[in-house]
Image (cartoon, rainbow, N blue to C red; front, side, top):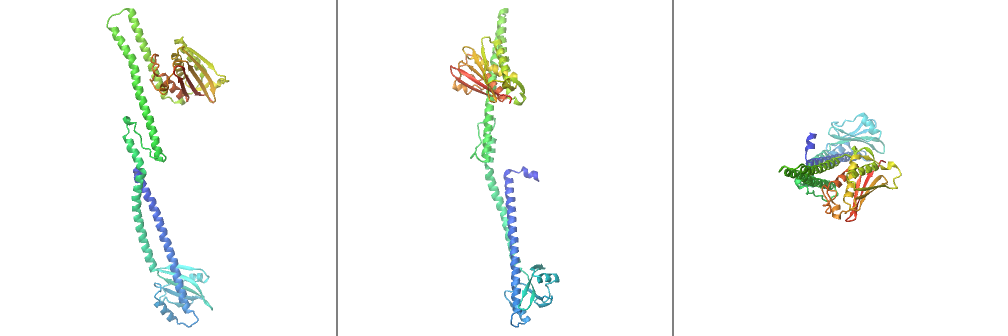
Length: 463
């Protein structure tokens, strides 16, 4: 049962909840109206019985001599007499003075008599009769009056009221269902629109967006969140698509070169020297292919790297010196000047948490780029401490980067328009940024065309 309710559509559930809430309110309100009316009617009828009894008693105990039989006849002929009205008057000795109840249908027990005699107001039901007992005082004595009647008119009115309330409740249930169905439909229409729009979105149409409405209510915020997710997905798919296309192109170039060289080599017999030259050329292409593959693997690794897994204590200055020495092995013409700022007063200010190999790869890329794109092949590296960060600044006086290229240099395989004469793949900076990001760091780039470039890498130090 409950499982079926949970499987219902939201509109059906909202309608049933609206119907249930409204129905409960109507039942409570109708019950309150009925019982309060019944209570008021009962009290009013008891007052009528008492007043009628007092009037009859006044006829009996006035200053003139009145015959009891005549009073009984007057009471019977009264056009305003209550239905099945009965009256009994007793003195304080429990003796009956007057009784219009000829068949003694109204039973008066001694205990009830004593309650009225002591001054208590007594009202009760006996079969279909409503009975009330009250004290009556004359100038000479005191009496106990018991009067009773059947409230046929009140019962008929209450029965009519009950029928009306039941009809109103049933009609209200129908109206609650109709109104609930209508308003729940209007309430969930934005959600239905979102669902329809989402159903239209696929991998080939990630550019579509969900209507955000006013953007301030819950559905608007949901649509905003979903649109932001679509933007991220679209960017990810575009990046992945470009990455695959560029990677395929970059891998195909050395493979095509190797294939062409080997085909030319196989066309005819050559001397040992010629074979050696051709094999060396093929070997260079293979090294280039291996280097590109390693960079692609590193880029993929750092994209999926969890920063929590990088938990080694590292001295960043030691990584800088190791990277400098490694570059000098293969590029003796490169000059890398490393300096420590006066803000570094303690070796603990240079300790970070991370992966020393990945950080060395990132620093190697930045040092190599600084030297490679500078006419004097010099890069200055400064290390200084700033609050909870250790900052490494790389500066060169090279060809610089234009404003247009600055927005794209961190995209994989993108190369600046003025870097065509310098060999490279366009993977170094994206790989470096990904490594720094995986270490909870940040990288900032500023450059002026023809004047040089400055790169600032900020890494959190151990608190």
